[in-house]
Image 1 (cartoon, rainbow, N blue to C red):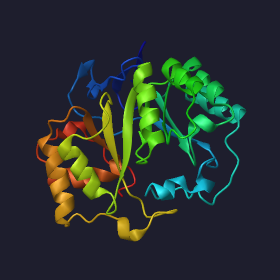
Image 2: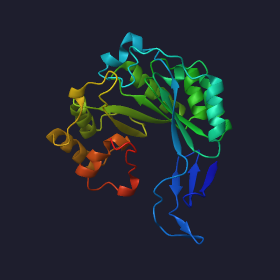
Image 3: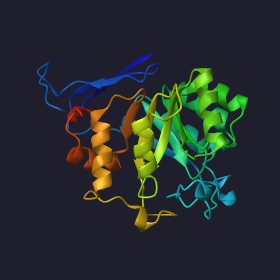
Image 4: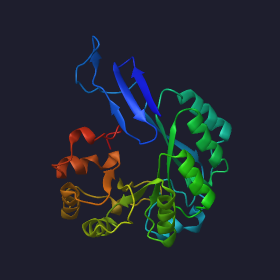
Length: 277
């Protein structure tokens, strides 16, 4: 299904293919013609992060900490209720026709929400594509089937454990577009460099997405990357050279590394951080 949205306030048209994930938008339209000028903003977000999880079912076991991932949501300690199904349904209904995708998240694995199936179904009923990130620890055959039926893409956090590989393989086998989310900090950049150089990520994945370590929650300041660090520049230079059997992407917090260290990445493919991080 292809969705077309006209932004009357900022005078441009955007199009999204719900099956392939392809997205494009025109320049600012004036007197019925595309001027080619990039719209500065949209009147409504075209992808919205929706934190449906208030607590992490696995956090109390410290599995993230054991994997070297320092949860910025502090899932090890914070216990709050998950978003109710009725609240989510209200949000989805209000966003219908205004946005293309929901990135489902919060403090914990979305697939462990008590109304996981209903949440995915609600998204599709309102012509919104749901995507989410998971540790994969609690994956079942039923969860994988739901991902195949409703989701655009699913990301598995790189936990360096068997359940990580099992979840990735289960999704790939089911034909789900599967990404790896890798938290990039001082404690993980050497491994990231080595795995990229050796192309040592599971075969069949769509992309490896690097997320910048954030020094909040359980995140520690000593893991924050410094742009002047030689290792950081070498890492981005390696990405710039490309030639991987999978795509490589970054969160918007990583844009300073891209614009300062990469020369071959197309600037039009970059969306910078709205918060100026």
